[in-house]
Each structure stands twice: as structure tokens, then as C-alpha cells.
Length: 469
Ligand code: SF4
Ligand code: SF4
Image: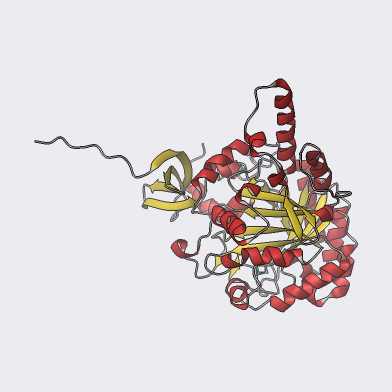
């Protein structure tokens, strides 16, 4: 008789987190499993059974994220208390671990498009808009929480069609807000040159966050419902002519526009006004027509790989985790000289970033360098001090190209921002969320949880199923 032979598991059990049941959104335990290069959450819901979902396609990068974490900055005040437990107490509740690096205020629900992918479910039929008084109350709530908020993004709906948009931006400029952005689909910017010229009056400290998913007709029709190629080019021409700092934002859907990532980077470099690109995997919330979990998900690590495989400008080591929220945001900074990019990370010896040398002089220099890198990479968007912080970092590096004086126009930024949804939700990550909505009732709610369960009121049902902690 032969003894049974024990078998090794076909994965590495890397740890545990709490995620969401993909059916009922209840908080459920999730095993973190590594299978070759892929990382999965294996969840178990008492009502809906086992669910297994890929959360990373690069296990080495996934593991490296924790090396970059820096202490969070606490907001000055919290708006809610802990009653039901995370994520049902937003927010911000005292259990949140990061302030608002970037806050959004949605000033209307109306839009001049009706995109098949829209977390806010906006459309021309939704007419509601906030008054100037309501918006000022939200700005003041943000200032009370942050002191001097880093970045406020005016959003919607389509904010450029709010009848008081210029007054709203002017109002924001009276507040102690360091950097102001407007999030737009570009339709009005393409058609109304005088409006773009009026926007230029809000600089410095002003940036346009321009939806820019694709250079191709088919992908635009899939994501936006219409061919916006002409609109996007015209909007960019008007922004270039007005000299307005612009960040392109690309929603990435697998098989639709993931092959265009390198081409979009090259296209962006043709415009001096474009200071960066943000790539976002589709978050499965709101209106997300024909979305199939197994077919359409494209992960942060898939985008990161596509950048260094499709773009001659970047290598893998150039795109690193953002220290305040490393598992959800990756970032690369490059020095820009016209169309030429020199990624900053490529100038830093890797051993300087990850190892501490046991020699007193090197050790001090090393920590100083690492601190500067972490400072530099700590904001995801539009910070005006970036040029100063970049100059301070470059002083420490051995092979810096000779740029006479570093200005904001000499810095190019690539960000990958992966919001949490029912598939990749992680209780640890959501507490590090640093992109928040300010709501009309003056709460500050992480982007991830707001779109998942607060915007549509589902949180009330979830709370009913759970007794107060
Ligand atoms: S996500 Fe943050 S604000 Fe919301 S309940 Fe969790 S800790 Fe609190
Ligand atoms: S995604 Fe933006 S442009 Fe499209 S419908 Fe929604 S708010 Fe409008």
C-alpha cells in the first residue's frame, strides 16, 4: 500500500485582505494568491460563493508597491464618525488614512454627450445643476478639511455648459486653493474659442483635464458614443493657442484602445500645452454599457506594461508606485525638451532608491535622495511646485542633462490611476484613497466608494444589512 503524497498548492498564498462580494457588495475576506506573474483575489461570500478575480498582471511590481508607502497626511477635520465600519462611514471618517490630494466638485449632471462609459451617468436629459451658493459651501468645506487644498477639480456632468462656469472658477480663485482644474470632454473648448481665451485668465495655477481616449473613430464610438476626433484636435489647438496647461485623460478598455497608448503619448508631445497624461482603467461603476468582467478589464499593470512596450520614451523602472497610494496609482516624471523625454527615474541609480548603504556619508545622502524622490512623486497631478522639487532632486543626481532653467513646461508626467470597484476593492487601499468628491451635503468621499455605493444610494441598503459596530 502506498502512502498518499502531499501536493503543493499551484499558487503562493501571499496574504489576506477584505474585498467586496461582486454580487451583493458585502465586505468579504479575500485571499491574495500569486500564480506565476498574476495576482488574484479569491473571495468567499456566504450568500454568493467563491469569486476569483485578477488584480495584477505583474506580481513583482505588486509586491514592490509596499516599499514606497510614506506616512499619510491627515486632514484637518473629519466629516463623519465611525458607525458601521469601512466602507460604510464615508466620509471622511477618522479611520481614513489620507487627506484629499485631489478633490472634485461636480457642479452639474447635464452633459452635451451621453457616453456609454460614464461613472456619473450624465446625459443631455439630466438638467440639474448646483447654484453658486451651494458650490461655495462645498469649496469652504474642502478648505475647512484641508487648510490649503492642493488641487480642486471642477467636474460634472460637463462643467463647461454650466451657465455660471466662469463665475465658479473665479470664485475658486478667491479661496486658498493651490491648483485649480476643470475636467471636460472638450466639446465647448473646440467650438468656443472666446471661452478658451477666458479660461486662460485663470492661469497660473490652472489646468484643463481633457478627456482624450483615442485617436481612432471606432474606439471613440465605443467609449463616447460618437467620433470625437475633430473635436479633440480642435480643442487641443485652441488650448495650445491660449497657452493653457493641459492634462489628457485616457480611459482604457481592453481590446478597444489599449493598443494606442504609445501613439497617444507621441501625439501629446506634439502640443507644448500638454503637461501630462493620466491613464485610467475603466472602473465598473455607473453607466458602463456591455461591460464584461472577463473580457473588458485592463489592469494598472497592463497599462504600465503597455506604456513601456509601446512607447520608446519609457522603460519599466521609470513608472513607479505613487508613495501616498502605491497600489492604485503609478507615476513617471520626465524632463521634456520639445519632443524629447528623459525619465527622471532613469537618472537615479536603482540601488540608491531601494537600499540603504551602511556607510555614514552614503547613508545620509541616500536618505536625502529617497526623501526627495518620494516628495516629487507624491502628487499625482498639476502641482506647481513640481519644477522646484524636480530641481532640488536633480541636484542629487550624477547625470542630469543640461537644461538651463527648469520650468513647468520642461516636465512631463504620466500617471496611471486605477480606481477600486467591486472586483479589485481592497479595504487597505481604499483607506489610502487620496482622490475625493466633495458632496453638496459637505461630506468628502473617496472617488472609489462614492461611485461604487454612495452616488446611487446603495450604501443605505448595505448599512441596513449591517448593525452599527
Ligand atoms: S473609505 Fe475612508 S472615509 Fe470611507 S469608511 Fe473607509 S476609512 Fe472611512
Ligand atoms: S463621461 Fe463625461 S462627457 Fe461622457 S457623458 Fe459622462 S460627463 Fe459627459
